[in-house]
Image (cartoon, rainbow, N blue to C red):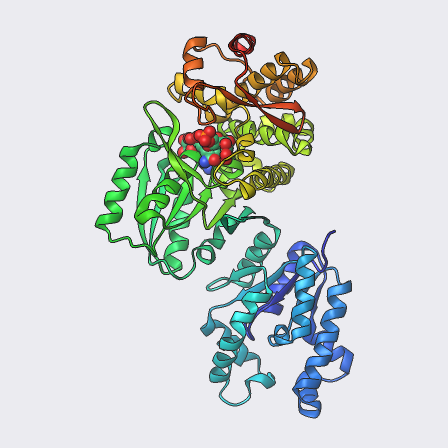
Length: 540
Ligand SMILES: NC(=O)c1ccc[n+]([C@@H]2O[C@H](COP(=O)([O-])OP(=O)(O)OC[C@H]3O[C@@H](n4cnc5c(N)ncnc54)[C@H](O)[C@@H]3O)[C@@H](O)[C@H]2O)c1
Ligand SMILES: O=C(O)C(=O)C[C@@H](O)[C@H](O)[C@H](O)COP(=O)(O)O
């Protein structure tokens, strides 16, 4: 159900709720309502006069009624009076609104700026006497409540009303996937433009030092992250790692452990990983191993890292023997998939990410496949320079959200991959072997695409799916610009590598295959002739 109002804004006196709220409404072409103005209209007098005549409790009753009515009926931007969220019935109304999908924005201004603005306006009964001292006292009482009753936190220090409004719009329109489960600390994946602005909130106040791990091609995004971290008061160690798979090695990890040791990183400090899946895998691995585990936040910048690598807590490095053979299951404190970073993503790396998106459609959420079919040509022609603000951006945001939800479903109940989570490995048994045999010149998502066609051929040979399902794999993946065949190595080499796959048990191979579109099963120890016949079918 779509929630209304579009957003509710709360904050301290002088935070700019009305000014910024009006600006947000203007930018979105929505109506704006201010609870205080509505109360004055309702009671037919100015608030200071009403306070004087009837006292605060009577005012709060009227206020709560007006707010309840607007939360029910108003379809725009609604700003609340500073003290309104302190009323228990309003807190309950806000909680119900959030449950319906509503966004309650805590506009958190710099105290000095807010006090100046509050004093300038005058006519505020709650600031009678020493206004600054009163403001500070109220802030102490209200700030924790504002945090509790809101679900979007926007810092506005130093921003113009327009800048603050743009930030509010970005944060309200972000999609949030909650990841939780019996064995994991819950965390959120925030998806959308400006998601990185949440970084300081997600890191919290405990860390003092942050290891900012990133690659050179994403320098401009890591520069932004560094600026956010410095504004947040953290000491930042900038750590540039080799790009792509060469960054996922024990040598690189060891170099970072040395730096963390030399620079005095303690258990309360944190890691932030910025980049593609290789960088977030390595950053997570460093966080998981330093002092047996410190807090980390991923800021993925490739489609593949947003939908898959950064979100499920699989961290790791490669060894000379194969992909991801050393690592740990270690969940991040949060994932900030800031879609503005996709503006610099090259077309081939975007397309590669569609491989993992399609995987999530094949194994569970078939709506993903419909979206891919419908938008195949725009997706295949992705151009970062024209992407932001285009209709494709919403399509991609939906694909990311749906794919992350598929990942969250599997991870939530099986973090350590005892069974269910293995389904996320659809296409990876052959895919990882191809990557290795191609010395990682083949991109991961491309190898997985061929691996899915292979798994479909194997399932067909085993009588689990019809030929048209195999053909559908080929036609959908190729319509997105993904490869569907491979001829770069012998069956013997591939078989040896598939035996080193993490799903293998003893000498027995274990595959993930479909028995229908959207439904996966395990296939244990199939006859080697069938494994070979499927391989023959994916060769060009
Ligand atoms: N942990 C997991 O669950 C998981 C899941 C899927 C994949 N992975 C791993 O992720 C890796 C693949 O991730 P990937 O496809 O992102 O590859 P990648 O990390 O190698 O990134 C691909 C290239 O794109 C560049 N890049 C990334 N974002 C950019 C941007 N916004 N602008 C310009 N350039 C950008 C990178 O620097 C790199 O050169 C593999 O190592 C794979 O094993 C892990
Ligand atoms: O999250 C998972 O679990 C996955 O299997 C997701 C895969 O898409 C991903 O490529 C993962 O890195 C593979 O892990 P591995 O354990 O097979 O190395």
